[in-house]
Image (cartoon, rainbow, N blue to C red):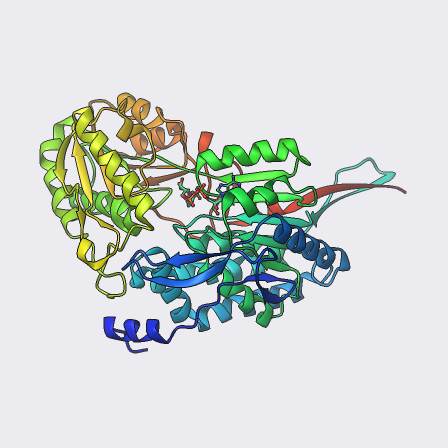
Length: 497
Ligand code: NAD
């Protein structure tokens, strides 16, 4: 396959036909109230499309469609092997349309086209395929009952699943939910972020083409406080799965308590520590990983390594390596395949990131790199990767999730101190550590209160291992067979023999 150039992607952008309507009962439809909002590209400020602004009336219609399809059994009672075949076809269609999906993702939220094409879209397809392939290999249980009884422990789909997802990995986060939710036989109402609805809208049509029956997957673009809230409070939604901020995650728990106690599964924010011990096996590799951990996806990553904990004895040697490595990450036009840092998602996110940079100055941290908005003449939203040294863990820039490429460097002297600083956060999504000492690596990994721990690497993972958070980073897990726990109920059936 020839590599597409910047000019090719620009040409394709001009030819692109963007669907902005909701998808309900197998059809693209306008919002019932007729509302629409502009979808603006952060690359250059251009309006890409107008999008249906769904609200409670649309939620009503989509949930009813999901319920009817679920109760009909057209998908929920299909043999697992047949659902598997459809899910694999769905994954194949995503792969077949990867260039269009990658372009939509990049235009919509500003990430580099090379990442959309080589990371997000393939990982989204893998997620659907992996869950689909698993579903006819998951056996139920026979309980260890007394001799005169038979006890069956079976898994059943929960019913109607509402999935609310964020803008930083729009397609991938949607597919982490859709893979196990659909494979398990549920019907789904998916609400993408108002900041990045395009790929979710597009894949709804691909799902239908793959053979997922009308009503089983519905997509409602719109705002959180309208259609998102309506799903959160809906009495006929059985399970709500979410990826997004801790603030909204908390609100969703309230909605569930105020309505029908729907199950609520949350993947929320992070402030992940990346600990570099003096005996790290390769300081160059650690520096490159530390740079990637804050610059990849413009730092708009829930697992961003935003707190770099460095042992005092190597700091003077190590920090210049990190600065040099981060200089390799330069903002540029996201449609250029050579770009590794794209645009921030919108002007609001830029204002948030710049305000944290200002706070860093005011708190007395010292700026080592970056700190400025750049490429303003493009009309787009770009900020330089930024490093603050001399940060204490009590500072606001070390405590709050910035969700931009801003790295805080914090010193420590002993492993105990490193662990105490690492765990001194309301979050618990991920952590990394670098050491050549096997025992220290395991001792530290055990002490870290985080759902993923990386040793001598940053951000490893695939569909084989669960992903999710401790503490206020959420509950439950995406990926792996554990993800099916969110989308199934366990039933115990007792038979007198
Ligand atoms: P957000 O919480 O602002 O929005 C997420 C989704 O919730 C959007 O679809 C939004 O419209 C919706 N929403 C907002 N208010 C709502 C309400 N009152 N009721 C129902 N829905 C509502 O998050 P974001 O800014 O889109 O994404 C960034 C956040 O996502 C960061 O905190 C990041 O850490 C987190 N995130 C977590 C993971 C993870 O797996 N743990 C992965 C990616 C992103």
